Length: 210
Image (tube, rainbow, N blue to C red):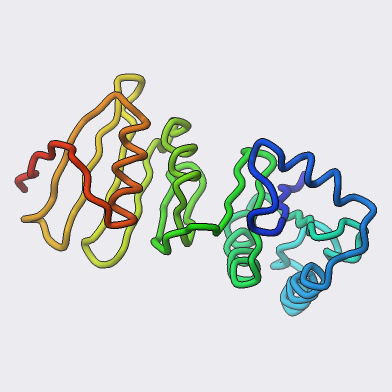
């Protein structure tokens, strides 16, 4: 059984209507940018020994799916393939859709920070839509989210069961490490997005003493 990821043009659909968009593309001639991305994926896959290939099919592309590219991969290659799709798709104005998780990872209005999602691995950017979706969904066994800008510059949250969230940020050193607790996932998402964009926030933080 393989894991499915799809590429769709950035801004072409929202998470609410992405399935309708995918359906509308069926039967359309393959877009040139899709053929270009598919060719690069096939090339890189073919360069590897058979035991190390990352595609779940012999090749991708060449289908009448318009501006959409369907990519399947083995479960143990999900992180690798997703990062490869970001590498190839983001500069070409494409988003990554994960139908299993119902995540539309669209680079529109992104902030380029390194994001670690406890349940899904690393991502190269953050958006307001993603953080607002991800925070309420954090769940065991790894209910945390971290966004990093540089050495000792990060914000993170941990969902402590059903009782709420612990949020911490560090601004360059242990002397500037702050913490708060809240039961409101919307506040957590707002704090993380404010940090990512450099916007001010009115939260009351407590300095953590190490």
